[in-house]
Image (cartoon, rainbow, N blue to C red; front, top):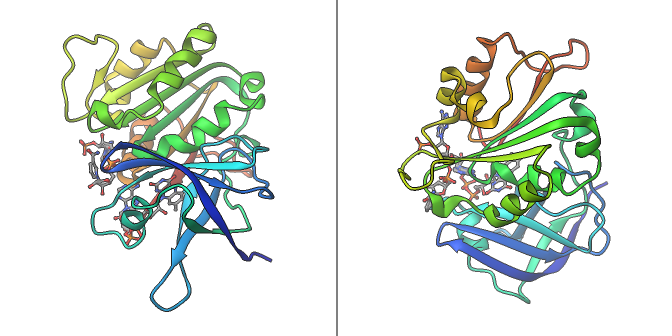
Length: 251
Ligand SMILES: Cc1cc2nc3c(=O)[nH]c(=O)nc-3n(C[C@H](O)[C@H](O)[C@H](O)COP(=O)(O)OP(=O)(O)OC[C@H]3O[C@@H](n4cnc5c(N)ncnc54)[C@H](O)[C@@H]3O)c2cc1C
Ligand SMILES: NC(=O)c1ccc[n+]([C@@H]2O[C@H](COP(=O)([O-])OP(=O)(O)OC[C@H]3O[C@@H](n4cnc5c(N)ncnc54)[C@H](OP(=O)(O)O)[C@@H]3O)[C@@H](O)[C@H]2O)c1
C-alpha cells in the first residue's frame, strides 16, 4: 500500500527559468532505474497535489533527483520551481513504472531517444551496470528547443569520453542553429530518423538488432514510432517481441 511521506528538499539547480533539477531526501525509497515517483505539495483541499517525475538518480542512494520542466499554466510544476533547500515536500512511498531494462530485450544497440525532461530515466539507467552489460552500443539522443535545455550535457560528454567505444551522446536542437558546433544536429528526432541523419551521426543503425526507448513529448513518440515502423520496427510486447519501448509524459 502506498502512503505519503513528508521529506525535505536537499538542493535545487536551475538550468534556466523553465527547467530545474530537484534533489530531495529519501532515506528509504527503493526503485529500479527508469521508474518514476509521485511527488507533490499540499493542495487547496488539503490533499496532496502530486505528479509523476522520473528519477534521474541511481537506485540505492539516499537522495532522489528529478529534472522538471516548468509548464507555465501548470498546477504543480511552477510551485516546485519555487522550492528551496530545506523546504518540505511530499513523496509517495511507492515507485511506479515499467520503463526499465527488465522490459527491454537485449540487443546490439540501445537507442535512448528523449525530448526535454524525457532524458531523466536514461540518466538513471546509464548510472547502473546492467545497461553496459546488455548492449554493445548505446546511443543517447536528446531533442530540445535550444542549447540552454541541454541539461546534464557535461556529465554526458564526460561519460562519452570515458566509454568512447560504447557510448555516444547526440544533442538535437529544434529552434536554434549552431554553425560552429558540427556535432549538433538540427530539427526533430522523427525527421532525423526518416532522413538517416541520426544513424549517420551516431554511427549505428535502426535494425532488428536494435532496441529503442522513447521518452517525453507524446507527439514525438507517435511520430518516432511512425518513422521506425517504416524501418520495420514495432513496439515490444512480452507476447510479441519487438524493438520499441515507450514512456509518454502526458496524453
Ligand atoms: C510517467 C511520467 C513521468 C514523468 N516524468 C516527468 C519528469 O521527469 N519531468 C517532468 O518535467 N515531467 C514529468 N512528467 C510530467 C509531470 O507528471 C507533470 O505532468 C508536469 O510536471 C506538469 O504538471 P503541472 O501540474 O505543472 O501541469 P498540469 O496542470 O497537470 O498540466 C498538465 C499539462 O501540461 C503539459 N505537460 C505536462 N508535462 C509536460 C512537460 N514535461 N513538458 C511540456 N508540457 C507538459 C501537458 O499538456 C499536460 O496536459 C511525467 C509524467 C508521467 C506520466
Ligand atoms: N524549452 C524552453 O525554452 C522553455 C522555456 C520556458 C518554459 N518552457 C515550457 O516548458 C514545457 C516543456 O518544454 P520543453 O521545451 O522542455 O518540451 P517540448 O515542448 O516537449 O519540446 C522538446 C522538444 O520536443 C520537440 N518536439 C515537439 N513535438 C515533436 C514531435 N512531434 N516530434 C519530435 N519532436 C517534437 C520540440 O521541437 P519543436 O521546437 O519543433 O516543437 C523540442 O525540440 C512547456 O510547457 C514549455 O512551454 C520551455
